[in-house]
Amino acid sequence: RKEVEQDPGPFNVPEGATVAFNCTYSNSASQSFFWYRQDCRKEPKLLMSVYSSGNEDGRFTAQLNRASQYISLLIRDSKLSDSATYLCVVNVGYNFNKFYFGSGTKLNVKP
Amino acid sequence: GAVVSQHPSRVICKSGTSVKIECRSLDFQATTMFWYRQFPKQSLMLMATSNEGSKATYEQGVEKDKFLINHASLTLSTLTVTSAHPEDSSFYICSGRQGAGEKLFFGSGTQLSVL
Image (cartoon, rainbow over all chains, first blue to last red; front, side, top):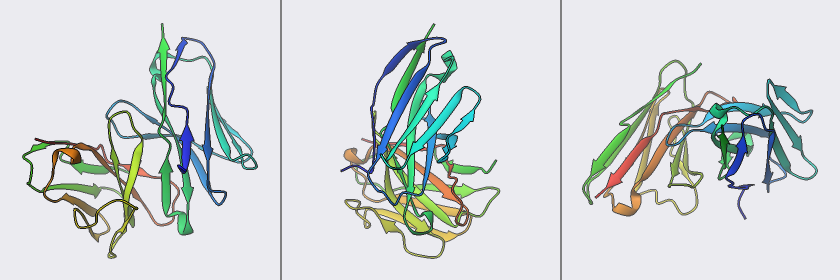
């Protein structure tokens, strides 16, 4: 079983739409959670960390459900520039020594 | 923010040759360096984890004799793909971590094409 699973999409949405991605993780000992954004053939860039209480950064809201072992990302008022692949990342292991990436969810925002 | 410089960005080589990829942390000490591989339309797959001054820990299914990792200093880690074959063609990317920090700092990746 994969450490991290995501719906690959693509999600095709119009500008201004609200879109949500989910991600599930298999290791209950996972310690930290993140959403990264990756543009085609570029390095991933950290979008936001995910905290148990949920957190928001502008149009982006991330939530963590430890009981069900899933993480979500909500994007409001989608922009064309939001088109990218969104990667769910889970950190496990002693001393934060393993970072596992989901396969990514592709988002296409259309005019 | 912290910067990891990865070179080369693109390499094309003949089958059977070896290719070295370098990652340098420019403004922080990368006590841990992670090496990932990404095939088209797939996720980043962790290949190995290296701590400065120690032997790398390889993920299951990754041949340690084929993918040689050196992390001799806090600012430099290298991945050498030995006797590369076409199936090794992929996007290789490193990411550094300082101490026990949660954040990863990525290199810009190396696209390897083996003919």
